[in-house]
Image (cartoon, rainbow, N blue to C red; front, side, top):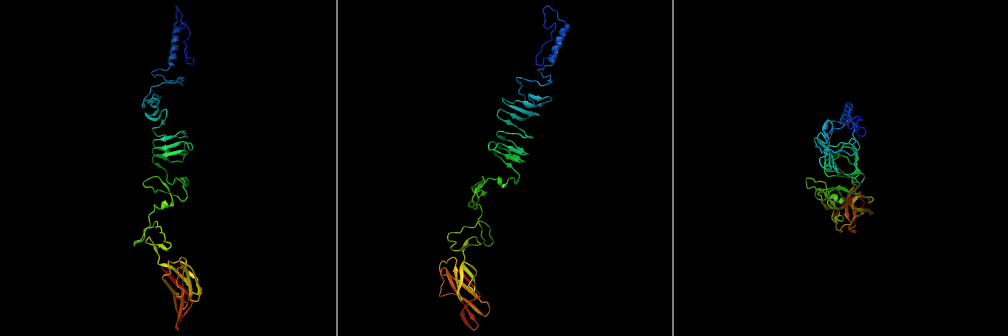
Length: 358
């Protein structure tokens, strides 16, 4: 009979089994026993690999195989001798396909020396280090929040939406599509901060104050006959405001020749237009008093005054008052009218034009 289903073999019982001394063995019993043995042995696996198991064989203690070769793995598929598992060294196993290693396993790492494509949703609980090209075409979430690290030491290409919950370290070039990052995704900055770099040499981007940012801009170039270029203007020096200096087209601060001017309504003394004039009044006929906004350095300043009549019936004159001489804060203009009579008398004019120089 063949094995009993648990792997045990028992030869058939007959005149041959058990044998009795001095008792003839029947030929049929002998032949039956030999046939049963042949059947049992035919159902066994030959050590030289001539037979193939017809069903799954349970190995309670495991199996031991030779190390094999990358071109001839020790565990291979029937009909495909260069695909399977071989063991290149102690505590190592390698999966090969077509005689090429596609995965190597040690007690600490799993290495994929060829391109790896995940069509499902792989989960990586520890740190992930990619030493070759890493291409992600779909949406990926890598790492636990604030815990795991993604290190890319070669070129990484991410063409889908990627979420990095932990720390992502890129030690070589990472290419992302243009306009991929919204302002909200950039690092936060303090109010009135510019992104740039003032430290000498190539380096990381720095947060700059407004003062630091101006040091990166070119200075204004004034016109010297061929035009200038825009840029940062020079700061005024101490006292420039008191001297009423203004920025010139040549790019420098210079004192202006005109200290003040005024256009007055001759009938009322009201100020129509002026510069550095705080007030204008007409306290009496033909008498106009003008007060500066900013006082003059002294009372010795040139004054130019002209007047215009409303009609062509005479000529108008304007002169600095001798009875009320100029001060550092104000001066008085007296107007007179010359008629065709001829006669001259103090009188109101239609308009009074006054310029003060420094």
